[in-house]
Image 1 (cartoon, one colour):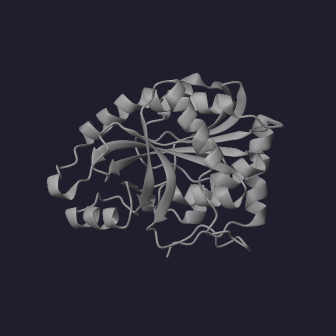
Image 2 (image 1 turned 135 degrees about the vertical axis):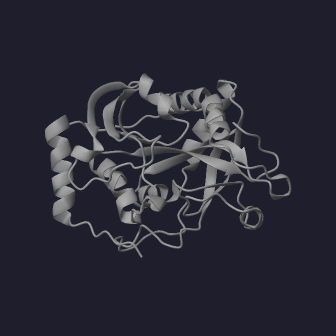
Length: 274
């Protein structure tokens, strides 16, 4: 089992570095830019851009398509801290590593978290390039990022009904077709076999991916309201399974990205907080 014990002094060093670089910047919104939401950066009024590699004790993105920058600025008129590139368990990080940025967001005052991902569709009613609002998840990581929480609320609604309702309203008002479903996360990085797709579908999943659950779990237990958004980049229907082609997956993400970006911006516009 991978272990990465973060000390209180390390947390202080990380936050101290961010404070020295960004002053007294406070953010009400945290955003983790997974596949399909990278274009949102163009809509951010950037005040500070900090490379992950320069932040003490911060993980570094190793996936080629994920940039490694922490961005602080404004989107839809609201202060946000944005992760341009995320971390995955299959990159040999522990869950404590993966969720370390969420704890930093909490220290910066974040009240709402929006996290995106690309995933395979399991629900036969879904299509490639569909958007899905995560209403719940199934954790197949067989591990928890809550080991340092004295009283974790494991049965808490991890995805905010308030944010889900806002996202649905934003989708309706902007004529964006969205699905709702259950997301299941496996370790990765290998894609699933026919038998595995059939298994996870029978467990009740509408989509399967390799991320998001650790961050959402820690955020909810820190009192941060969370919205999970997925792009269906390929279909994992076991009786009609086609080989996954990276170019086609990226094409589906590119088709969906403008819709995902618009949905995110319009949802953020509805948020209000002190």
